[in-house]
Length: 300
Length: 302
Image 1 (cartoon, helix red, strand yellow):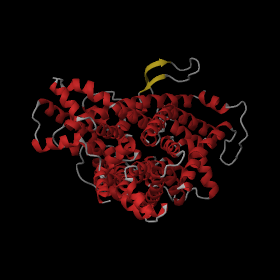
Image 2 (image 1 turned 180 degrees about the horizontal axis):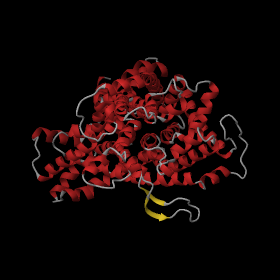
Image 3 (image 1 turned 60 degrees about the vertical axis):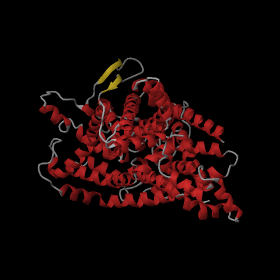
Image 4 (image 1 turned 135 degrees about the vertical axis):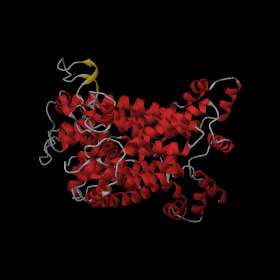
């Protein structure tokens, strides 16, 4: 049992392979580029870095110029004006709170349900489990436009259209295929012995899941949680269709500000920073899980 | 588990079926539910395909998809190779290249709308450089590499590359090439070191190794990347809405926006669902064979 748990712990971050080991030894050896090829590689990376950072620079510098930025260029701000942030906060704070109320429960509920689904698909071989899994994966690949009109009609009939409950429900349901995939791929690697031991001890499937499997699932949850949170926070289409003015998520509100001629680009960029902040912080804080999940979910 | 899976199946397959039914019916206004089949059968599709706007949407989304996939996959591969070999600040480069992936398309759209604004943004710099007629970017209505001119036969639009699409390709590639890079990095880490060492012994240079050992092994990653990115680009909506909207003469309109407009402003549920079904079919042409392959592989694994 102990060794199995250790194996799981080492599996949690992105798998370390020969390449990684090789890179690590290289890193210990020498820090500076030594050949022309290495200098060229570094130069190319630096050019790309500037390219990738440029739009981020544009957002930040325009936001710092404040509402006076309207006619300006892309240059550095000559003085820092924070009033754009104040204006943006006034416009967006209600919607930021909506987004939190949508993304947090949406993430938690879909992760728990997805873990249960993934566990059953990985550990109880029943007829058609694989077909079911693939049919579920199709759910990740459909353009959501193909369901939004019936979805709208359905939620309206239930009286859930325009409510936070409605949008959380939508995110949970359409997020499930993805979370199930991540969790199933995670559970496939848990040794059957652990589960068998629990079953011998007289636990049923659900109790085995709660007592034994859930505590082992933390790394899987982190990966699935990061993605669910990011997907729900960044969603626009469902927010636009399913919510009403009072329940708009912040992405919908930010887009509406674009059409508002009284709102200038300085304020808009400050707002864009506020919309971007939560997912960027999650990404920077938990980046290695992010990359691990990206590839474990997709490269199969 | 059963209830949640059942719900997912209803919300995916049930609703797709319902969309298909609406697209064949006479249901136009949201409040006037009318599911009687339109006659002749499928008339809504015929009407839609003859429409100038929908034709522009098909052209735009095709051009966007091809350019976006090309730039993103090639860019992602080059970035992954560079990161794989760079000896300084590897983590910094990787973090910054993947950062846009964490952003909402709306945030990206707002930033690039400003960058490509014809009267501000980079055009101010181009003006400083002495360029008299800077590009009009997403408000440019001209079509490059025209292979067919409007008004001649079925197509009522110029077929070619609408110049206004280019800024949107740039923005989308900025956001997603880091994703392709991360996938390729995982692929590169899986190449056995011994193979590369053995070929070095045989005197192979780096570019020979790239061609004969590395690139062939990147093929499965490339297929996965293409399918995942294709699905993003066909349904593209938020980025275009926030960056340029439908544009003058629907020059940046895409099916995603069409569906939304038909559902809301235009009061045409039938046309909205028909366009959505067309999108779905376009996605399935590529996704179904891919998933079938995954399914077969899973079958062998067990």
